[in-house]
Length: 449
Image (cartoon, rainbow, N blue to C red; front, side, top):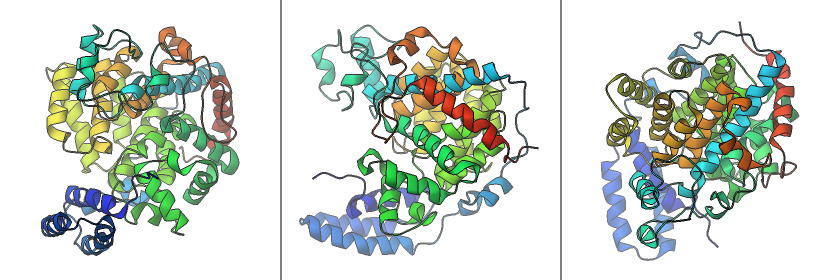
């Protein structure tokens, strides 16, 4: 039986990196662990030994950035500019419906585009495309015409078959698409007053455990040991700043059109189940951008609105600001990405910070073009399906479903697969209608001024 992401020794390895990123002095503990690991051949002994080092890490002093990166909502807003939100705009019912549907379809198309190469390095994605004469990317991936020698070092992601252009019949199951459906269920069941506990309970009753990964799997495991939020996010969870919360943001933006502050607050309630600090900020940032996309058409302004809802001195805020500066300079997307990789490439390929910088770069250099933006987000590597999905959602809302190119939307056949009870084979029309029904309900209790 193979179950990843929750083995104590595996968690410890990632925690050593995570603690170091937070500015903690881990060098001594890390050196001792490496020495002990080298002489222990028995996996059971190694697992037992990991407990000692976990305790040692938990006793370390907080890093210097602790005061700049709170995990409580009040502290987050105290270090950000949450009162600067997008204007309400004039959204009639037909336009609102088109934008919500655009969000669902755009997210699905971007996610599907990135699935075959998820986790693959940027240079290999380019090699794959160039070998078949398809660089730069401008359509769903295909295996046709790709020579075998391309696969000597890397190969497709394990879920690639159903995601190739020649095999697409619908949106296949993906965790990036499970979460907006799950959160729609939360919204319908618990309404605007939902709590983190309600979201977590919905995970436990609706979401199969092996369909969650990294921080979500640890939080799920912690919940089964009777931890409650926010401790489910904090207890021995080295993935607490990874991308998992950021991919759960969309529904909270869709039900708060033109109101990014409210979207960020809703996203926070979701994020604290499994994430802290920059992991939380990633979900708040994306939810705020999506909410702003209902009423704004300038990509840079949308990004800057999202930036208002995370602590200004946080590592995520600094990464976003750095990417904005690259766009303002004399860069192409590729040269800007070179700089982003140089500066943030030390983060794990599933981390929030580097992937958020890539998302922002794709949005900026895509300049409002749906195809160019989702393709940029995938050509950049790292967490390709997550990034394609986020970029697709933002552009899908901004442009609306009617403006999305048929080339990207028609292959979805208005259908999505999932292991979530009650959602399999849903149509995007139905999901958009159900989301619309929640907007008025949530608006009645929003904090919008």
